Length: 99
Image (tube, rainbow, N blue to C red; front, top):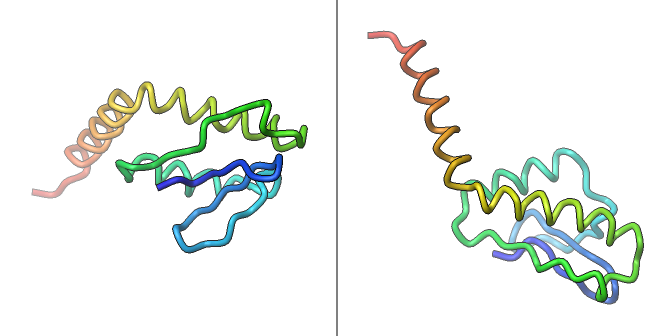
């Protein structure tokens, strides 16, 4: 599912399929964490490609470029990220389990 869009020279995001689109300059830490969770848990997570020419709003361009690049970097390391997370969970589970 696509969680961002570029429209009318601005960038918008949403946290759920049926949710209204919100301008990217309204994003906060909690929203980013929700998007990160969606990125990890959903196979079809997608952000619209960053295109500087389509984003005329400077604030939106700066914010979205940073977010887009971070998610792009995470995506290129997603398997390693998931493996490390699973290993840490497994270590914690083994350490604290009661037999």
